[in-house]
Amino acid sequence: MPQIAGILETSIYVEDVARAADFYRSLFGFEVMLQDDRFCAMSVAGKQVLLLFRRGGSTSVMEVPGGLIPPHDGSGQYHFAFSVPAADLQAWEDRITARNVAIESKTWWPLEVIASTSGIRT
Image 1: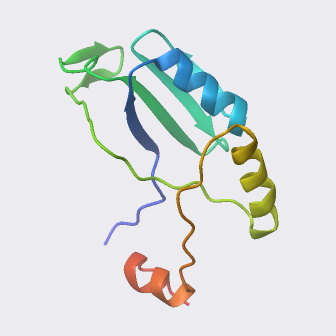
Image 2: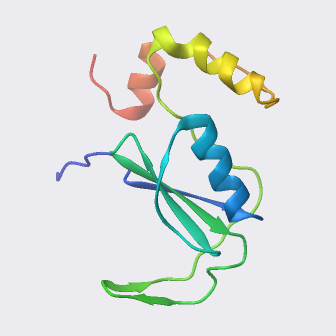
Protein backbone atom coordinates (compact mmCIF):
# COMPACT_ATOMS: atom_id res chain seq x y z
CA MET A 1 0.00 0.00 0.00
CA PRO A 2 1.33 3.53 -0.75
CA GLN A 3 2.36 5.47 2.35
CA ILE A 4 0.88 8.69 3.75
CA ALA A 5 3.45 11.23 4.93
CA GLY A 6 1.04 13.18 7.14
CA ILE A 7 -1.76 15.71 6.90
CA LEU A 8 -0.77 18.62 4.70
CA GLU A 9 -3.69 20.96 5.36
CA THR A 10 -6.38 21.39 7.98
CA SER A 11 -9.27 23.75 7.23
CA ILE A 12 -11.51 25.57 9.64
CA TYR A 13 -14.29 28.02 8.85
CA VAL A 14 -14.50 31.33 10.71
CA GLU A 15 -16.62 34.48 10.69
CA ASP A 16 -13.67 36.90 10.59
CA VAL A 17 -10.56 35.71 8.74
CA ALA A 18 -8.34 38.63 9.85
CA ARG A 19 -9.28 38.18 13.51
CA ALA A 20 -8.73 34.41 13.40
CA ALA A 21 -5.39 34.85 11.61
CA ASP A 22 -4.28 37.36 14.23
CA PHE A 23 -5.21 34.88 16.99
CA TYR A 24 -3.17 32.02 15.51
CA ARG A 25 -0.28 34.32 14.60
CA SER A 26 -0.06 35.93 18.04
CA LEU A 27 -0.64 32.78 20.09
CA PHE A 28 1.30 30.19 18.12
CA GLY A 29 3.56 32.30 15.93
CA PHE A 30 2.21 30.76 12.72
CA GLU A 31 3.41 32.63 9.65
CA VAL A 32 0.94 33.85 7.07
CA MET A 33 1.69 32.34 3.67
CA LEU A 34 -1.20 33.92 1.77
CA GLN A 35 -4.21 35.92 2.91
CA ASP A 36 -7.18 37.83 1.54
CA ASP A 37 -10.67 38.58 2.86
CA ARG A 38 -11.88 35.03 2.03
CA PHE A 39 -9.09 32.90 3.50
CA CYS A 40 -5.70 32.74 5.16
CA ALA A 41 -3.08 30.01 4.74
CA MET A 42 -0.73 29.72 7.72
CA SER A 43 2.44 27.67 8.00
CA VAL A 44 2.48 25.28 10.96
CA ALA A 45 6.07 24.40 11.85
CA GLY A 46 7.02 24.64 8.17
CA LYS A 47 5.40 21.23 7.56
CA GLN A 48 1.64 21.69 7.55
CA VAL A 49 -0.85 24.40 6.61
CA LEU A 50 -3.73 25.70 8.69
CA LEU A 51 -6.36 27.14 6.36
CA LEU A 52 -8.81 29.67 7.75
CA PHE A 53 -11.79 30.17 5.45
CA ARG A 54 -14.54 32.74 5.84
CA ARG A 55 -17.69 30.75 6.53
CA GLY A 56 -19.80 30.69 3.37
CA GLY A 57 -16.99 32.19 1.28
CA SER A 58 -15.94 29.07 -0.65
CA THR A 59 -19.20 27.57 -1.84
CA SER A 60 -18.38 27.90 -5.55
CA VAL A 61 -15.68 26.28 -7.68
CA MET A 62 -12.57 28.45 -7.61
CA GLU A 63 -10.12 28.52 -10.50
CA VAL A 64 -6.47 28.96 -9.47
CA PRO A 65 -3.30 28.81 -11.62
CA GLY A 66 -2.80 25.13 -10.64
CA GLY A 67 -6.34 23.93 -11.35
CA LEU A 68 -9.79 23.98 -9.79
CA ILE A 69 -10.65 23.92 -6.10
CA PRO A 70 -14.04 22.30 -5.45
CA PRO A 71 -16.62 24.10 -3.29
CA HIS A 72 -16.38 23.52 0.46
CA ASP A 73 -17.66 24.97 3.71
CA GLY A 74 -18.30 23.91 7.28
CA SER A 75 -20.03 24.76 10.50
CA GLY A 76 -20.38 23.35 13.96
CA GLN A 77 -17.77 22.30 16.46
CA TYR A 78 -14.34 21.25 15.21
CA HIS A 79 -11.55 19.19 16.70
CA PHE A 80 -7.89 19.34 15.83
CA ALA A 81 -4.77 19.16 17.95
CA PHE A 82 -1.30 20.63 17.77
CA SER A 83 1.66 18.47 18.74
CA VAL A 84 3.96 19.98 21.37
CA PRO A 85 6.94 18.55 23.25
CA ALA A 86 5.92 17.26 26.69
CA ALA A 87 8.47 19.57 28.30
CA ASP A 88 6.67 22.60 26.78
CA LEU A 89 3.13 21.60 27.73
CA GLN A 90 2.88 23.75 30.88
CA ALA A 91 4.33 26.77 29.08
CA TRP A 92 1.68 26.36 26.36
CA GLU A 93 -1.10 26.02 28.92
CA ASP A 94 0.14 29.19 30.63
CA ARG A 95 0.33 31.05 27.30
CA ILE A 96 -3.17 29.99 26.30
CA THR A 97 -4.83 30.85 29.62
CA ALA A 98 -2.98 34.20 29.74
CA ARG A 99 -4.99 35.12 26.61
CA ASN A 100 -8.25 34.28 28.41
CA VAL A 101 -8.80 31.14 26.35
CA ALA A 102 -10.37 28.43 28.47
CA ILE A 103 -8.88 24.96 28.39
CA GLU A 104 -12.10 22.97 28.41
CA SER A 105 -10.52 19.60 29.12
CA LYS A 106 -7.28 17.69 29.19
CA THR A 107 -7.06 14.02 28.27
CA TRP A 108 -4.12 11.69 28.62
CA TRP A 109 -4.00 8.89 26.07
CA PRO A 110 -1.72 5.95 26.82
CA LEU A 111 0.55 5.16 23.88
CA GLU A 112 -1.13 1.77 23.45
CA VAL A 113 -4.48 3.47 22.73
CA ILE A 114 -2.96 5.91 20.26
CA ALA A 115 -1.02 3.13 18.55
CA SER A 116 -4.10 0.90 18.21
CA THR A 117 -6.20 3.64 16.60
CA SER A 118 -3.55 5.32 14.45
CA GLY A 119 -1.53 2.41 13.11
CA ILE A 120 1.62 3.44 15.02
CA ARG A 121 3.82 0.47 15.78
CA THR A 122 5.33 0.35 19.26
